[in-house]
Amino acid sequence: MFGSSQFTDVPSDKIATVVTYLEMRAKPSVDIEARDLPGTLRRVKNPDVDWYLGVYRRISADLLWFSRLVMPKEAIASIITHTDYEVYALDCGGGDEGLVELDFRTANDCELSFFGVTPNLVGTGAGCALMGRAVVAAWSRSIERFWLHTCTLDHPRALEFYLRSGFTAYERKIEIADDPRLAGNLPIDSAPQVPIIKA
Image 1 (cartoon, rainbow, N blue to C red):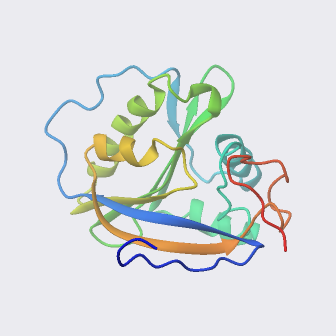
Image 2: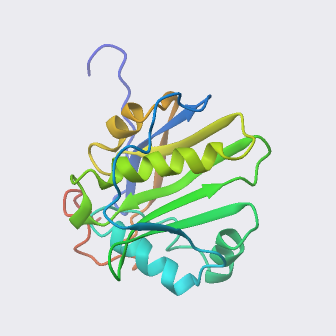
């Protein structure tokens, strides 16, 4: 043990992650739409849940995104079809390769609920271009704060990316949840960088 460090046991069928909350309190003054998208960004109104989950799974194939996978489809539909919830897809010539979700359901706030591109676009600059469009869309409404949370199960450079995009970290939490692979919500070989620990 070093200094005042504290360690907490995590049950073998669980996963633990550090969650960082970030916010942007003003619309950026620089041109954040300068980068070209590798496709067309379109607003998807009243998205079909099966379509949505297909894109969600493809984006998170190498990660352990699971929050939508453990929700009933009716609950997902009630969120993504809400009038104050916007879903955007990045169409790259016949396939949707990116997802942006903006949640305006809380007054004066916009949450970037989900944001990502499929593994084949990671590292190509597509994420930066997509973030520029997300920021513009968020601040197109009368809000006081644009915020999100990311975690250590996300892409290793996700936190750095959000900080570079103009967000400031303001809170950190620990989340402990059922391992979605052991619960059957994701293939057992998903996210090999996070080892499965069985009892």
